[in-house]
Length: 285
Length: 285
DNA sequence: ATAACCGTTGAAATAAAATTACAATATAAT
DNA sequence: ATTATATTGTAATTTTATTTCAACGGTTAT
Figure 1 (cartoon, chains in turn brown, yellow, blue, cyan):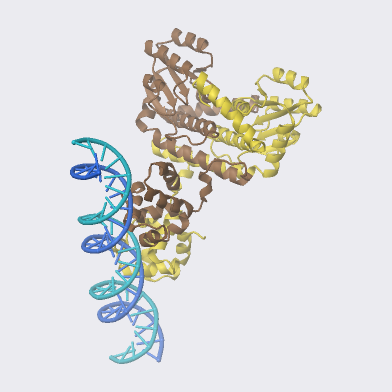
Figure 2 (cartoon, chains in turn cyan, yellow, brown, purple; figure 1 turned 180 degrees about the vertical axis):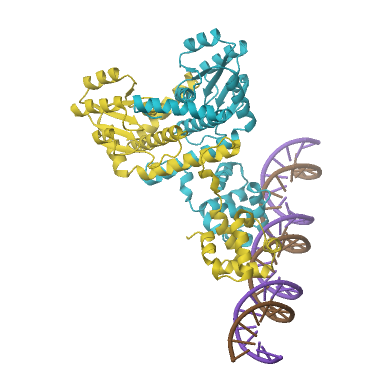
């Protein structure tokens, strides 16, 4: 479940005046709130108990204030500054807390954003085609490589390259047997869109891994895998890593789901490949 | 605070008949209890509401049943199967839970493994030298590229390549101004060790990002950054991704710590670079 | 400028939940 | 068997959460 305090902070700008007063108090004293009654809290802020209840139901429609307190207490062993932007005064420990928390949130959001239906469609495509082309540019190229390395381990043929010409050549040469995985955080990368058009014209299935499903790229896709459903991107400075980790995580889910399709066969393949690497390169498996 | 359920289990033998009934129910369905009222619970067990309240006050004398529920909810958000190995029968939801949990654990372990002292020594080296060479092979090459991309954003010159010849050439040509970042999960990669030897012979500072600090590579390092302190590596199949994410996370910490050294300057640089990218490539920043 | 409207808020009434007082029952000791 | 004591449940009481509805304030249309 998404962090309650985090959600409140996100919603803050859209709230009414009284709601903001309530939100601010809760953000400042989450632990205290868990032990208060509606009346206590209304008096402290100050506002009416009705407003408190209404506020609670914004975030916990079913359970009201009682459930709200439960959720609050479930997460109130953390302190609240971890939701904030990174600042120059942060100690190493603050930094660790903030970054860890963000990664955690990103994973949770990606979990809800990736539906079973979409993952399964993607797996189906990967299963049906025997040549997979993975493409990403900039930071997303790193993910494209990760995709390749993962699927190599179970003997799936994946080609990746950040040169559109190279990719197009092989894709067209094998268009009947190929599917393409396009990774773009923004979904507006010129090269990514160009590749998607090319694939579409040639009826090659397109799996897109991206930040939201309204982008130009998403519209061209056969299947859209949305990682990290976050609407606003408050932090200029941390976007890149969390979105990369979200992508990695999404690929991991895809990989394991694919793995499951033929569990024992893939286990054998992976053990073979690990043994080989361990013996010859002493490298990470 | 001591785990509530644990305390209940300990007290179990000394409790009366009805109290034991209550205790057993709570131990079995802790999460359900958090959403029940005294009446609901009394009916389920079955017993009287008075007994429930009395029971609660054994463990939470001040707060009664309400506080009891709060403590219960604070500790009952994990379930236990998530520790298991991935199995072919897992639903997509199981898979999500297990993978998320592992990533979370990895991050936590990396947090404790990376000491302030080591991170700060690493930052110092990065700060003193104006040419950074990052090297990794296999999966670790992806991390090496991530390192490069991150530091590019604040105008730091980082060269990466998975060809040892290329890297050696530039490293030796600029040995006075250079530092090297070597990434190897195992710490036993032949090429990584070779590069470390070369650097050491030429008095080039060596930052090593690796899994433990007993490896051959770790021994050659000026600073060892240990990610993911896990001793056991139960899962053959998931090691790669979690270690990659641990590496990414470690690099992220390093990056932000470095960033903090000259906060305002770096903020400016990053905004410039983001604007440029957004304008010209519409790509992930 | 003013009327009509709509979203926001709080006071008071109501419903639900927790707690307590006390009586009933069971258990143990003499 | 009787009394003392501990345990439990019923019902009354208190506290807490929730809903209803009227009042307020700001906005738009006339």
